[in-house]
Length: 224
Image 1 (cartoon, rainbow, N blue to C red):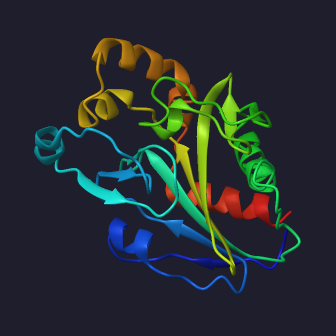
Image 2: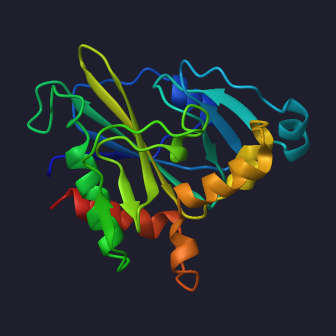
């Protein structure tokens, strides 16, 4: 798993999602989240509460990969992108298995925090809210703790390779998603979303976590 290069991209969340980046070599990009941002999937058709988004100062961005919305909250989500050229030893043509290697890296990261994470190897599940909210569903290669999703992964493939976008929840805030996406009935949505995912800080509230520590753990895990 060696021979990765590291980057720390700059620019707005929108600029970093839309930027065309070379897929000639393996790369890890540790992304900073400095602005509250709701990121919609490429084809997602979702009702939005624009007044709530505006009041919260939440930006709205659409990514190029599919899936439901991900809410990027400063200091509450650890966002990592990886770029893998087609033909790499880690490349897998079978989409149902193509993220197993990456999910295994996240399991190692979480084990460094003494958290019993599990790689999800089942089929993609479509729950009631999963077309709206990424963390409401499960896809092969994503990571669970106690049956709840903690790492979401999406990917966009081209002839040259793939971009994998990963979000590790540090704190799960479904009430914001219910409000921003105007999910109805809101009480049912909130209850079901609370059961769908979990954040690392929800499990180990006394541990000091920041992006630099998590990046160190991730780099150590992917270099093994």
